[in-house]
Image 1 (spheres, rainbow, N blue to C red):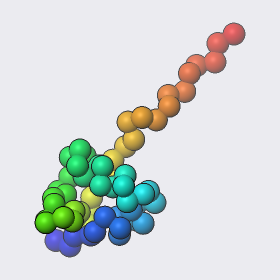
Image 2 (image 1 turned 90 degrees about the horizontal axis):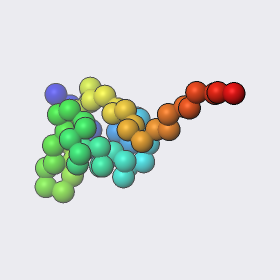
Image 3 (image 1 turned 30 degrees about the vertical axis):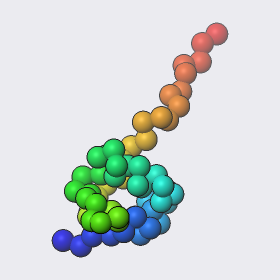
Image 4 (image 1 turned 180 degrees about the horizontal axis):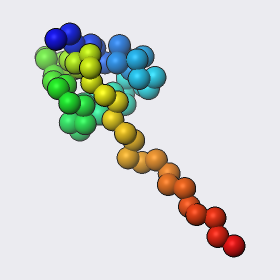
Length: 61
């Protein structure tokens, strides 16, 4: 299996490197592990869904 770095995954998912590190630290990326000081992320890892997205409020009159 091939592993990507945080920078490569950030570019692939179009998010910041800090967000990728946070996802990994919170165990939200399956198969990611830390080797020394760097995260190793599997090439087939899926981007986690954001939990702080604003929910649309129904329009009421």
